[in-house]
Image (tube, rainbow, N blue to C red; front, side, top):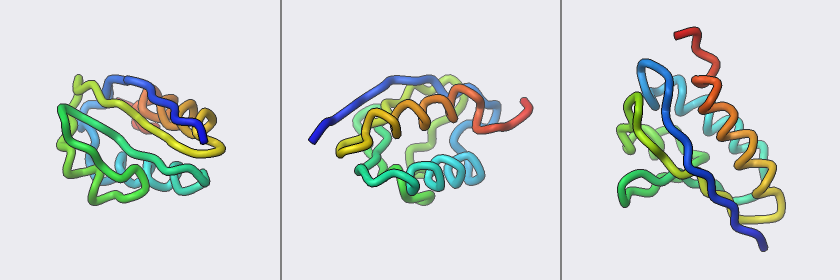
Length: 91
């Protein structure tokens, strides 16, 4: 079973707020692997909106996206791209 990690910076103005967390969790749900996000020693379930919001990741925060399982590489790639695209927000 493979484990993939990637560090990425939150770039959207509002940070990892509810809508952004929902977009992340929805995308993560499409993968079979386990997904989590880490920040400063905290760890959140990547498939749980509430868990993600508890990270309080504001703009500029560096987070680590972690996936473990068969499709981990694809999941990390898609999820980091979502963050880099500012969760689809225009600002």
